[in-house]
Length: 401
Image (cartoon, rainbow, N blue to C red):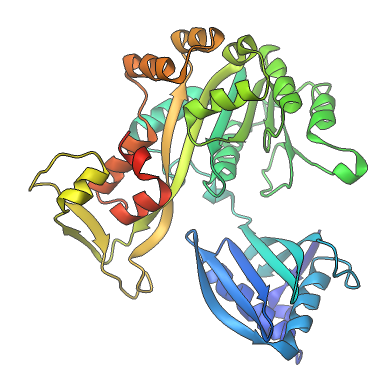
């Protein structure tokens, strides 16, 4: 992969200077994505900061093509191709900070739309507490991480932070006594000590045949970037039943939805019940800025949104906006978790294919399962996040579960 120093890119070229400025701002504000969107007379630049898109500038039409072309050149893309989508990667450095950029183009009516995904190359970000695991959640997570075999899945919708949690698991388990092999598309973090494999479908390296090859490499732990289809899921479960620990992500709204998703793929219930050790389901919410945090009395409607009875003593919290949070009232994001540990009773229910309501009853009797709705309610009440942010990340029906 190409490496570029932003400090060395300062030149008389206005397009390059603009790109360097945008990238420096994105890194400073910890943006996760940069969107460059062609309009009839300009190029709009937006950044996704703490999950929200924010307009930062517009580029004049006469500079639009030069900016897109320079970014394509940085990412080793075909400069002559503008009618088909392309993907590329480049690592940029500014001082001691290295940032991995994944760049994707998409032909639109006014030119090529480009999205740049930024990933800091800092293993310190991959920490249990940094992603928001505390108390009971941390204990259940630690219990799952002590597993020597079985399947552990990280679930959530797009943008919920699943990949970061998966890498946290990989970092936790990677040591010199363990052979840990990953299969990823793409490799987003370099984890010292483990063997990371990049999917390349153009050369025939897919999740399915890549996993088949890994199983012949004597692995202790296998980490799959994502379970995308029934064939990969079945192979992962068979590997788990054969004594390996398999870690992966899956798109699902919550922990119980994972079981339904796997059954809908056509997987046998005995495979799921025999291999599944647990599910870490999550969403991301913005934290209230600690510098301008203030309390207020919620209205009856506010309380009803979280299935809370009227109570004059209850307080919600918000940020009034200050220089530290740039007037937003928020600083950083944190995970909201529900962690399902599959005990024998739940595994038996899965094997018998009982309904969702019966599985919920099993978890309720277990007494150790805290659903997402209860977790986010707790965070609103203790001042970690706001009512508005919780309702943005969860539907009203979810917060009242």
